[in-house]
Image 1 (cartoon, rainbow, N blue to C red):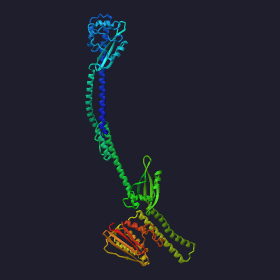
Image 2: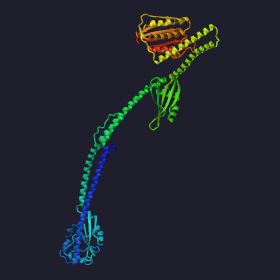
Image 3: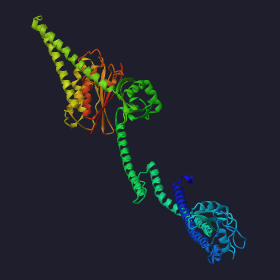
Image 4: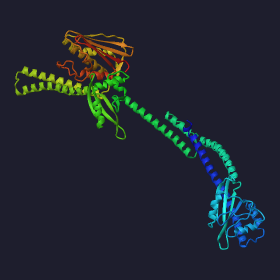
Length: 609
């Protein structure tokens, strides 16, 4: 886990950089010091070798007549702090005094022997192996410098060689100086120890500073990480709390700004989602949303009512209903062609209109579909009523107009000449004219009621008197069919507020229907009751033919007639007018009927209206 921490990585990187830098600098300075020490020693030894070469050459040219030459030669090791060898022109070491007679080739040996007769050259001895290569290069007339590790001194040594030339610039010998670089190795070892100690101290300091600066650097990153995690959890009020002017501070401020803007955007999205949800919930049509696999993912509340299902609409029931509606293939085509489609489906006695549409994103890709389900049963019924209304009005006008036209043609053509027949034709035309007048009057009354243009004249009404007036006006019609109107009245009835003429018209329509659709010799009863001191109940019952359960919901429609044969002089508008009259007075009505047993109509009128 630690290797994945940025603080560890930063600290390790910082330490590595410091170590590499110090190591490189230390090695560089050690090498510089070593090179300086060697160069300085080489220059000194070369200067000494040149000096010895000149002295030896002068000694040779003076025919061995140089006082103090022997002492000089014996003190060369002290003067040069090196081992000194002098060779002849062939690379052979000279024979030193005190060790026997030798030769130097071409007379050099004799002179040196005489000059060194008084003492030995302290550094006489065999040449080291590292000096042999130097002699060959020096005898060719070049100065030579060699650096190597001496097995004699067990440390780094420098060997320099300088040729000895006579006056004719001929090489007659060589001078070799061989010396260890005294103190360099020890100094270098001491420098290495100091470098190691410095590296250890730098390592400790680098680790400490690396940890400090890493934590200083990563602390705001941790704060930003925690803030980002809080934002992902929906806490858009989270802030980094970083107040810096560098790049980390700018990043923290940007993250805070992002949280603010994101919170505002999410809040707006939730508001829009809530509005959209409320709008969809308030839509009376059913809505089904599908994903790209044609699986339903969301529905609104209205769909359950349209599909005759209880709330909540279970997903299992929805899938079964969708399979029964067989919309999978049309919906697939809609999503493929990206075009809306409308379908008409029959469902449990209802007529459903389904509008299928694709859901397309900003890139033109189809991500799902939506189905709008409308119950058009009522609109279809209203449309059918409109068609029936036109047909009924046409029929109601055609019959009396045909009778009137036929009668007029007979009179105009002179086909009818008998005065009694003429009168009978005239009465027939008058009767049909009255029927037309009644039909037009009902149509005008219904139109006025539906348009809301009729105003009611509110006044105090004594309902027993109003019902008695309505019963009295229909007694003549009832007597023609030997129907008895039984009216039960009470005295202690509160007064109510309403339009006397409109209420009288309402009860006349109801009583007229009761008499019209009752057999001869039956009874029609009228009674009233007071409910809860604020509602008056009027009950009109008959012993007529009754109304089937299927016809009951439609008796208040225009031109609807239970008598399909259209016998009688009813226009089919009475109950439609009665319905609007009750709405004007905030009345409620209920109808109970059974075929061949009669019908009971209950009207509840509020006493204070």
